Image (cartoon, rainbow, N blue to C red; front, top):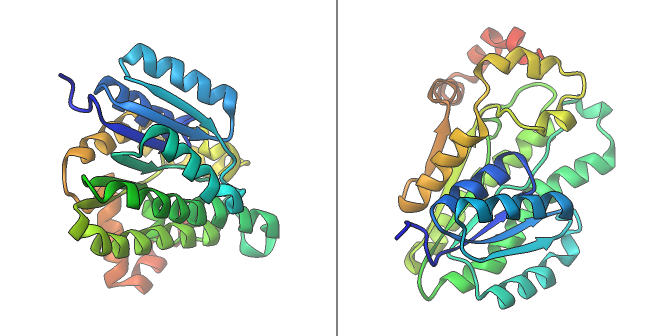
Length: 262
């Protein structure tokens, strides 16, 4: 029997990139999948690929997570139909690398809605369904949540919020045997940069150390079976984040040239 046979895994942002890679990796382990994303056509494609990889049941639920007012009712319907979830992967998110003064107000609001508010509301909806038999919430954060850089003020603030939220609910949910893990990757080779870095300069400058979505997905699914608080990728970037927490001024001075490549 595969490791996730009979387990329901709910994944947001599953229409492409890391979300699709996580869905495919969970499918290889025999999981039943609940896939959420805005783009229905791409979401169906993910479902078809996951079926080929050996997934159990596959539920496709298109929804725009920027429409945060509708999330509670939407999640009530999804969880009622599916009977809950054993694992929640809050993966949906997007970024824009731009100075704050040049960032449109609507983009700021959307970035916080999708990266933070939606994640919180979905977690809130899922937790009661996990209380009887336990569960695991995996929040995809970022090294940007530990080390802020220029032109990432909103994205970095959003990921800092995800880390703080995760640390808090980890303690709240522990007595109900609900685990909470954050995955904190550096740059991943996905279409994230088509929106975040329209000039292509930053993506080009970090291309040599970009992570593959398949590798990050495998590490993420492996975390389903552990009680790890965090998965930090790559290791050297996490060391830089730790150094920043100890000596932020020094790291900002030393890293100024690299930070400003955005």
